[in-house]
Image (cartoon, rainbow, N blue to C red; front, side):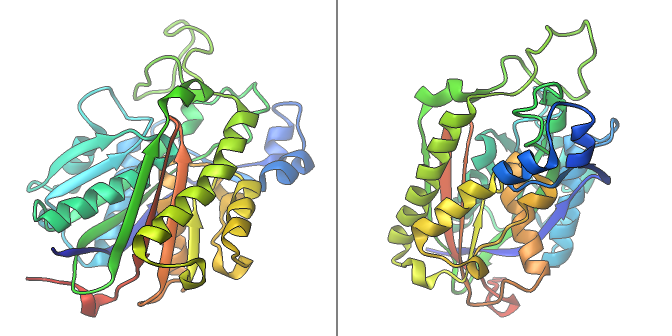
Amino acid sequence: MRKAGIWGVGRALPERVLTNADLERMVDTSDEWITTRTGIKERRIAASNDTAADLASEAAKAALADADVTADEIDMIIVATVTPDMPFPATSCLVQAQLGAQNSAAFDLSAGCSGFIYALAMAASCIESGLSRRVLVIGVDILSRITDWSDRTTCVLFGDGAGACVVGPVSRGGILATYMGADGTGGDKLYVPTAYFRYSPSEGTRPAKKHHIYMAGNEVFKFAVRIMGDASLEVLRRAGLSSEDIALFIPHQANIRIIDAAAKRLGLSSEHVFVNVHKYGNTSAASIGIALSEAVDQGRVNPGDRLVLVGFGAGLTWGAVALEWTGIKERDLA
């Protein structure tokens, strides 16, 4: 069976920065309260004319350039998102058009903040089975459009962005194991009651508050603390690895206390954990892709390094990937 690995990574973030100081002027909160409980200092907010496809395409172009792959060499595009531009066509098809990737199939995947992990696992399966040769994986969300900016318990958490990677065959290393799970009985802990569409909601077009995120914060927090550790340990077991083998742990960037709890469960020091939640907040399906791209750019990922990526999200869902980072020499171009 062929092995699948990540050939290149990229990210896209809106220009507008919304700081905790800005939020202090919007709702009854404080920088100290937000920082202590979440670790978040600022987040990015999409412009009114930005679409999920726009951000996804920007991240995809960066990943294609990093992988030295052209758009017409991609034969599958998977977009993980909970904020698609429209119910249909799929946001992945809009991305395909923007990229000019005329040789690719395309579909969207909805698994909340676990979406990037689910999509990466699907891409690996496509490569390993021979169904695809080059798969473009993108996680993108514009959560600012489904955030209730009058709710101080949720509006401090979320931001917008996109993260992408190109997955292709490798001669060694690559994706060593994947693990995914779901518990639909927890669906009422984190949800949006009504459908999301491309443009920001206007008064009178949809029921008030029905297009906003609802989250049972304490219950989601307790679930996340448990499942991040459980999923990480399970994917390590499947890969035949232990915590000592991890060069870098890249968790979903939702809350610094959740990240710290998972790292402690694995016995990892801070130098082995990547954190950027302070800059971007929770970007949902984009979170892990953005973090991986930044980690690579910062030189924290090198060929031969073993990584664990892990996330949790609405559904409730969870997933983890264990991989060995490969260099250009390990790409299988046959």
